[in-house]
Length: 295
Image 1: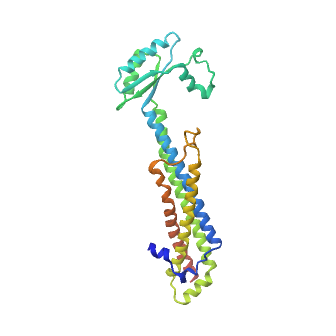
Image 2: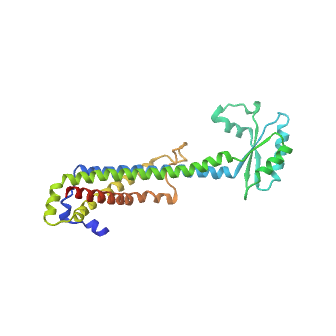
Image 3: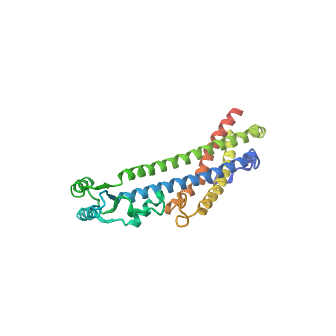
């Protein structure tokens, strides 16, 4: 089937215009949609990967906040550290320095915030190990021994990020599906226009005994190859554009590091074959339907 599609039939190919509006429309549509598909895949995989990584990092860390009168902050911090050292599932616990707390508050209050002179709670970073600790048991012990301690196990932050990762992947898949659906619609219109423009040639082919399937095969071949060519060029252009974006170590921000990692680079390779499959079935359905209407 593939060999016959590539070889074609010189007589049947005369029914399909080699150049013109429909040829340019098919090439442009396939190329543009493939370009957009590359970015849809890159955006969904990057944001999903980022949300998943944040969720994994938050799952292994917790924060303990000490809110107490100035004279008791140091004593309660030491008591909290002793409790954490004795808690199973806690790999490490350390109190953040004033400079580290200033860096955490800097995005909201600027770099000159006088942390030492403000009633800022003391933060303790907790790193888990193994299956982690028992949050309910730790909270009960802290409430008895460190009354000013508030434990945040990041569950309120982690769960939305994990959910976001799944939704972003779903949105990416829906975007790609819509892109290929739009490609199918445009190729269908182009095939119908080509069939209408060559109605006289088709009529002559029928007079000499050509069947509709024989004529449709020529249209399917030509439009499938055009879609493959356009999608291949659009995919290459999309990958080149992704590679030109700044890396994470060059610039900060959400779009820095946008792209694929590892086996993820294989996803764009599937775009041209999928475009060819979409063009094959869209053109075949449009050709057979239009030929029946012209009969």
